[in-house]
Length: 298
Image 1 (cartoon, helix red, strand yellow):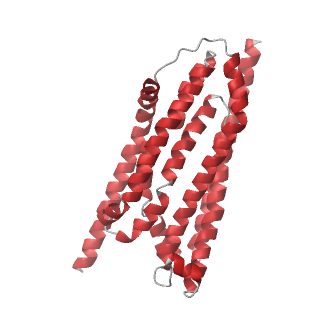
Image 2: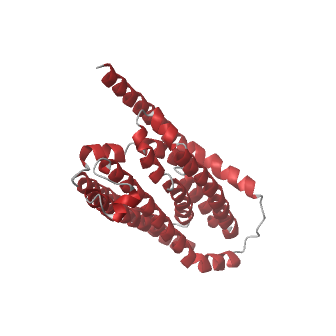
Image 3: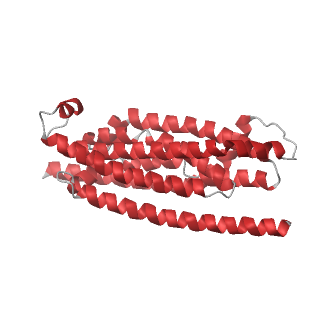
């Protein structure tokens, strides 16, 4: 009986891995498609692409700090508890992680939003402040999504990760094209009420389109996060049924200790991504400032 259960778990895990691989391919294809489309929208082009990605290096650094190692860390801790029937402890790890990374996500999002002006000045490109502000809230939603994905990965349920990634990228692809195209259209009609409200005109249309593209990314991330929360909500009854049927005695542990354990695993996993993101930011700041100085001297 135990051998059958192990075999079933192994098959389920392999199917999950295959699903994730297919999801990753779809995400890459969708990403390529929407970038090609918006690049060819009149008024966007290479300049729009440059502005669109201007604040992305800062975003990836804060993302690495707030969520990169989270799914793996939570998946490890949850699967260890579930393997010995400690379902309640697994759920407590999930709840503690949700609180911890919600706080970290809010701090990181707030930092990027309110410090965007100073960061843009340091980059030597004050115009990209709006781009970073539009992208800032996405960090919070990614942090929450990472926790939910980690929890279900620990249950060997890869649908949460694969479905949410594909849906998020699909939303991002469609909304980015729509948002950029709408801004492109209203920037031409300077007299329209929407153009006046958004302060969009022929002079700042490329920047406005880049901001719209990043705003679309934030909305897509929010929708992906919402899907994951609904995914959890639909399975909450079964999760608690398994907790109540668990034979292992539950020993309550301080939430701060659980959080420290999560960080002890997630931080080392994130370090490589953090160092890499720091290096890219240093390169970006150095190159932009040198180009600016060289242009001024000439």
